Figure 1 (cartoon, rainbow over the protein chains, first blue to last red):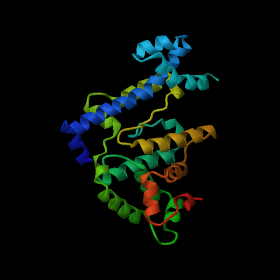
Figure 2 (figure 1 turned 30 degrees about the vertical axis):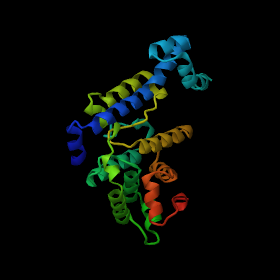
Figure 3 (figure 1 turned 90 degrees about the vertical axis):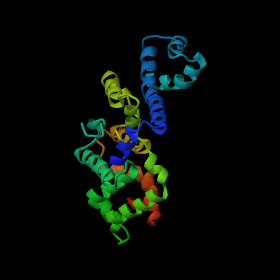
Figure 4 (figure 1 turned 90 degrees about the horizontal axis):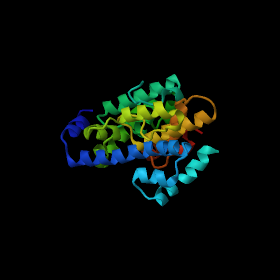
Length: 72
Length: 175
């Protein structure tokens, strides 16, 4: 994949922005696991939200239904 | 591990060989990613039932698929700008596969990576993830035909467009 490798080495804005977007997706893959672990350890939504630096409402909306499903 | 860094335990030997072949196909075409189209092309090259379904009436075989794909790629130059997540992460100093390996080691089956390996498009990754889920529900491993059915069932996939562009009904192809 010579063309792609060359593009990745150039340090272009395109590559940097793609990296940031990929970092967000990677965080989205990992975050639910740690939220689940925290809930299993008895953490409140408020405490989880504080650690994630988001509002309690945001974290509850994002994960409450999923957590109910997992714990069934 | 294969180059695609998948949860190998979910895939049978032939499926893993198909994934490697898809990566080789993408590389041979100088495409900087592995998409559903490369999975389909690899399947057409390796699986007699897929080759038969595509070429039974003399309309298309792997060569025709490749020609059609090259035509589609030429018509969509933006596709060649695709940067796979792990490549993009590496470019900013993040080791995506290492992060996923750590998550897999810590959380086991709870961890379902959205991007299974370097160079794979999110859509191809999604197809493989769904094939894996279905196989797990049936208490078996993913077979190559599961991957083919997955890429053709996704109406927005390049593989689907590729087959439809050649005049086939993707849904009926393997029915």
